[in-house]
Image 1 (tube, rainbow, N blue to C red):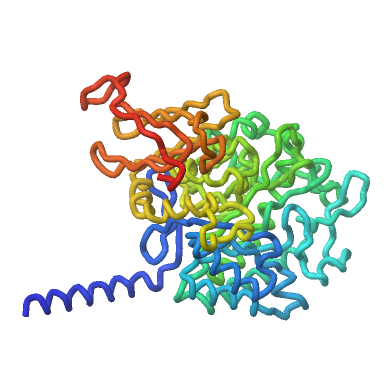
Image 2: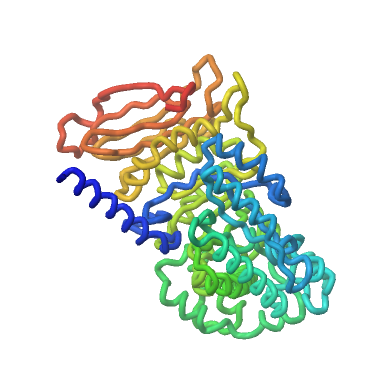
Length: 503
């Protein structure tokens, strides 16, 4: 009788708990400098993959791609939804393709992140509807220094802003009606890699007029209040007693001007969407290649040097994320480790993604990672070898609960020694120990991660650690200040991180 009563109470408790979280939207939770995505009341680790730009353009593609990615331990797919797809005729919406993707994702227990290709995608406006692109009077373009219109909708176009906001709000309303109970869709990316490609800033007559006008007081006051939090670049250019953009921001005026205008436009779009369905929303950044200047890379995007401009203008945006394709992955992800900004990598170069994932989850406590073009990979058939990313996600999937718990208590570390780096050996400290990793270049067989290596360390208890990675020889020793005994110079153990199974 007591056993039956206890079982009944436990069942009731489970039902009550599930009911309490059923109406709770996915949301971000910041703790001890780290951000986690909470889904159905629990932290969720995104093992993601972003589709190619045209890979979600039909319903039939979902039938092939989603099952394949689910077999590869991808638990969240980042999929484009284009403005031209859902609103081919003005004020007439069609969500049939998206609905099919949601249905197939549910069947395979996979989540989605929607990438809104609205007014801009990779700076250009190619994914806007034809009725927008064909009407340059109603929807003016940004202009180059020679006065020629570009294939870029102007950030100053009130009509473009209004129509984009209306379309995005319609999308979010539909997702709420379709998915608020199941919560297949976890987050939204608002626009894609925005920025002005040209000589620094828009040179239209209206842009020139506003550039000569006073800088908005709201921006100046916000930067004054956060003076100690500004990036060194923005801080060095910020002269708060100036009046015009050039006087206040000096040589950085063009890029800050564009950042403000993109951010205020995006705020209008994001705010309209959040009024319908308040999922977490973020904006991604195309980062400059070495030696590129603003305008060669998209000027005015959420570059890390100017993030405080975005945060002043766009309170509806929850966080900002870097798309990292360059070799110095660690440098760029560290630029986004600022207070209140959780780490999520929506696009990463596929070739280096397996080892950069270990670094992102371990060292920066990212709640998600996503190589671009994930649909180019295929789950193995018969005796085919598994793609490297599949092996890494398989391992991380098995460690997800441990990893999430350790991230919340700052008990994870990661490192990525590169073969081309002057520092083939790296050291991190955790739990009273130093962990030294050296590239295993002498191996006669090709490792999982070619000539590079990576390591993720999870501390799960006193003197208890899990190490995941590949391509490294790892040694560890107590730190000099450790109260547990031995000096740091004493190597307690040495082992190889094996390439055949990623453990």
